[in-house]
Length: 303
Image (tube, rainbow, N blue to C red):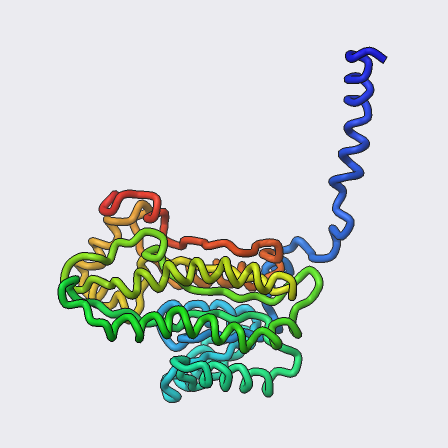
């Protein structure tokens, strides 16, 4: 057979071969209607630092869509009030407050044990959101900042994930793995908080480490049917940004410095967190998702 004839034979056979190769053998495993594809109803979730700011936004999105969400924070009163507020909002889910100080490995183990005891079916979603920052001029930046910030922002993320892994593996299902969602920052992707009286060197470095830890944990946990992804928020209302967004001038500056002319809102954060917790993201693993209106890709101050 000459070359042209062989090519003709190959092309005539290609459609049948392609159909056989690319046909989805489990296309009915997850329904494509939004309520099922993006559904988190009945899932058990743990959100650290969930009493305020980004953690509360994530917890609210999960609760309103039917998940049972454990909110962990250092202060019991804040946990109880945040859980009460979420339960009063409505939706088909519920919130439970759990006081926990994640600064030590023993405390991380105790929190994981409490979830284990309360949820024999396991933990579907772990959101590592608790974090700290420390601002000071470069010349005066204290050594103590490094231990406090790195311990909570990086070390605690690893320790809590490690202790929660058995519960996550127990909850994982074929086609819908368990999830670890780390919260870093766009500042961990492009360091900017390095000048002025509130330079945040430890914070910037810690969030870059969270991004890298996400990749490392992805490699470690994928074999147990656990995905690990990371959300890197831009400017959102929180305790860390209250000094900037408290005034009309600060809010106006935030809008003008963002390509979309806005700063982050609850729906922006809740949306991506629900997606990463739902069957829709079952094949998303080891990624860092900036949620910043495109600021990471624009020069600072771009309108």
